[in-house]
Image 1: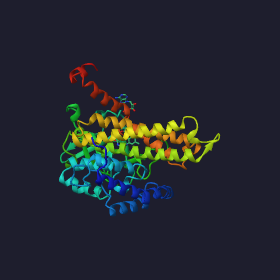
Image 2: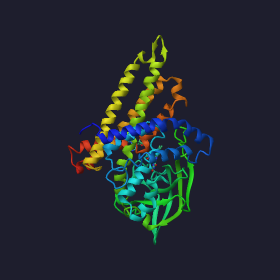
Image 3: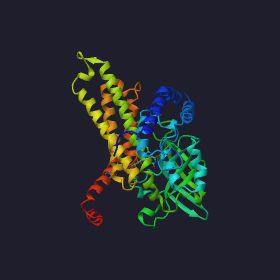
Image 4: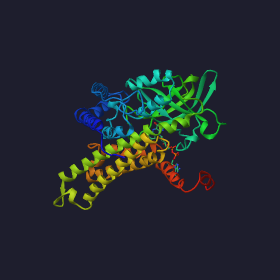
Length: 409
Ligand SMILES: Cc1cc2nc3c(=O)[nH]c(=O)nc-3n(C[C@H](O)[C@H](O)[C@H](O)COP(=O)(O)OP(=O)(O)OC[C@H]3O[C@@H](n4cnc5c(N)ncnc54)[C@H](O)[C@@H]3O)c2cc1C
């Protein structure tokens, strides 16, 4: 694999970096202020302005590999751009590249019907609406997606949906107009054909946002993570994506690219934390020396640099595999980076917090919030342990057959 950025990617990196410097970083405080002073669950004016500017600059929908939509970049080409966007918590949305919309748009691009694309994909691509993915349920261990119990029953030309979901990210935002609901449609089918993904408009009668769930006390407004009740919700039968019982087939596709974007962004956040760590450690002194020169602090800086570089190369490798051999064959690489990226980011941010002393855990610096956010990624995208299980199985699979593996459980 050639790790050099092509001239096209290098030019885009420069444009995205310049946009971040000129528009996004200065807007961070404004965004926080607008969320704090208004109704926290309303979109901010500053974000809409940033979106207009990015659209005008032609920096729009940069994700979406192998598609007639978007900028036509491969995963490998998009990775360094997502990394730059990830250096700010508000960095992805201006470019219409934020979660969970990117994953949901990919689902619609790959598996949506012409009608579904027209109704939902087009306004999502235009940044006019946002979306959510409702899979996890409070009542079952959702790291095993085959456990999902929320029911969708076919009644004539409709689905009747009942169930409770939570951690439905983005559902608190009034711009969120559509949810991809993952529900049990046929309990008698083989295990991986029991569930379907169904498009549920958020204004359908019976869809109730119960509450936003805070993360370590942060509400992530106006995006939020919602508990959602589906009570006798009825949607047309044709709202099913790809077909009945094909939820897992889609999940395999969705949980690849859409989710590796988190890893790319985590590296960007770690990189910015390292920058803050270095700046702080040379600008303050104790015991007659700059903080950087005390104890093992230089080692912490060096370890952070090495870990970030390793994580970046592993992410690029996963992206490259996705581009060249496909998401299915790249499953182990995708799982590896999902464990590595947030863990590396957490370690780097933790060291940056430490070197900032009390300031590190305050809200005067973004580190505490970043830490909370990265910590959730060790769960939000499936727990580390589940990804490790996948990586471990792939390794063992080199030495034993599938049947032997099953028998040894
Ligand atoms: C901030 C945030 C945002 C989220 N966004 C979304 C979203 O938009 N849509 C959505 O549907 N869900 C979302 N989730 C939910 C997330 O996907 C689930 O929390 C996750 O899959 C784990 O499911 P669970 O919480 O039911 O934990 P459980 O399944 O109960 O697992 C609990 C623990 O059991 C252990 N465990 C599980 N499996 C294994 C294993 N194989 N080996 C060893 N140990 C294991 C792990 O330690 C795991 O953390 C989000 C979560 C968070 C925190």
